[in-house]
Amino acid sequence: MSTLAPAATRGLVEIHNVHKSYSGFEVLKGIDLTVAPGEVVALLGPSGSGKSTLLRTINHLESVDSGSVTVDGELIGYELRGGKLHELREREILQRRTQVGIVFQNFNLFPHLTALENITEAPLALKRLGKADARELALGLLDRVGLADKADAYPRQLSGGQQQRVAIARALALKPKVLLFDEPTSALDPELVGEVLDVIRDLAQLGTTLIIVTHEIGFAREVADRVVFLDHGRVVEEGTPEQVLTRPQNPRTQEFLAKVLG
Image 1 (spheres, rainbow, N blue to C red):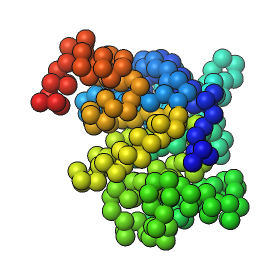
Image 2 (image 1 turned 90 degrees about the horizontal axis):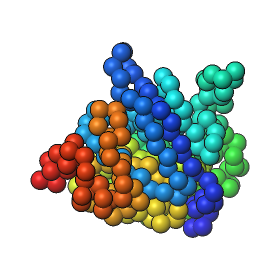
Image 3 (image 1 turned 30 degrees about the vertical axis):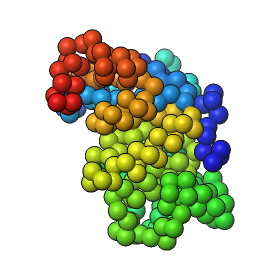
Image 4 (image 1 turned 135 degrees about the vertical axis):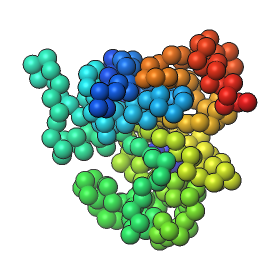
């Protein structure tokens, strides 16, 4: 189990004055956010507030128009030359992106690969491990997420919760410094949500740096070290779960929580 836990000095995320627009519409309006190694941060906010876009800038699935995102001081999709950011070649981006795992709401498993093959695919493709070691790692990860008996199952043979747990194991296979979750339970039937949240809860206890976009307020309250509330592309409030979810100061946060919590 200890092989999944990153060193305490790894996983510092620094987001500085990040702007992002689509077709002239500004989605992120100067985001500043620092996530300490091993910290669990929950991103909350209404639809369209920029949460998922912000998450995707961290591993350079989305480029930024200005500002910077670094993991342990290293730019993921860019290098600095002559005082300006220049986008790296795709191969270099892929190499750096392995530092930041991401779990999507719709699982994104390869349907033609078994659970085991979905997990071994990246370590093998990147020549991180040989076949035997990749298989051993994958079996250990499947056991870690409670699916040791599903190694040879295809995604279509798994429930949504099981598919999401395989997706988490796959993200862990490259031993990322940071793990991102984009609404990890939103595509699941309500009775399957708990099994995925249990796995994320375990990861939080291991000291993995986690950034989670979620609507699960109770889960954010329980697991997050810090809650960050976004609205219209800006961070409008942040603090401990107790501060933000119980005693929000910003009227927009108050309004959102009143609606969500009923």
